[in-house]
Image 1 (cartoon, rainbow, N blue to C red):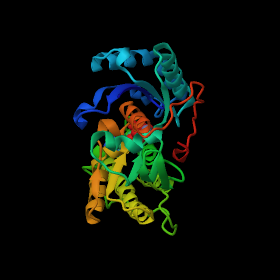
Image 2: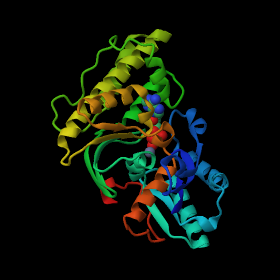
Image 3: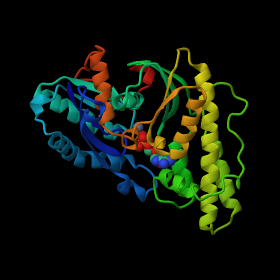
Length: 342
Ligand code: KG4
Ligand code: ZN
């Protein structure tokens, strides 16, 4: 089976062609991403209107490129998938209308995919990861612990009550006057910083369950930065980055232990996904957590953890393989689409 997928839910215009035969390393025939980061950088965050316009400009370019790189023709595609939500409505509509049009023109079935399901199943595109597993999805828009029982069978064990972790990295980046998105730069600065210099209270200390909250950490960081006055030295920035990243990781470590305690199946595998999964310090902490419990830890390559269309194609392959129906051509785009409603 070969699937063409389109992903336009946020600030990446992406198209990919993925097949389900052969060794893992040969399954992605093409995975094209046009990032809009430079477009949004000067605003310090994604501007939905500009994002939608740029998707319109780039969607045909990335699809053509994906077909060219995969060296296949329309005829060889079995179905067309696109992210149907959740995400920014303008971008979602561009991807959905394009996928539906191609589906009608080429007479191929169409499948709307939940963006989160793409992140949830990515590890299985790369490695032999068996169900059930405990997954941490941490990106710019989402933070959740999910027990993944099987394709389409998900239980959200806990999620953020306010900001997503990536959003918090980006806001702290802005406070430190770093280029958008702040996440990768904070990780770089943190390498040369003193994690113990700035103190934080652990969020949700008295709360049961494994929900998360990052807004208190963000506010505390703002206070630490203000206490340093107008001109921060390079070392000040490194120390803020290290202390901030340290508390975020300590908090995630604490909550994932609770998430694991809440699982109801015999979990053997721990998986991370989403853009923040690029953070090597976080990966190391989760590997340590998994090894301590004799569990396997899987972290897909960074290029597949952040938004891409290969994960959307893969989710479609998993769903089709399990006998889930295709989507009706009048499927309504869903800017809000809980993962439990797939
Ligand atoms: O999944 P993603 O590409 O897009 C969505 O938000 O859906 O995630 C992007 C997020 C941004 O907030 C970015 O700052 C964060 O992932 N990020 C990181 C790192 N690399 C990317 N956060 C912390 N450390 C990193 N190395
Ligand atoms: Zn995402």
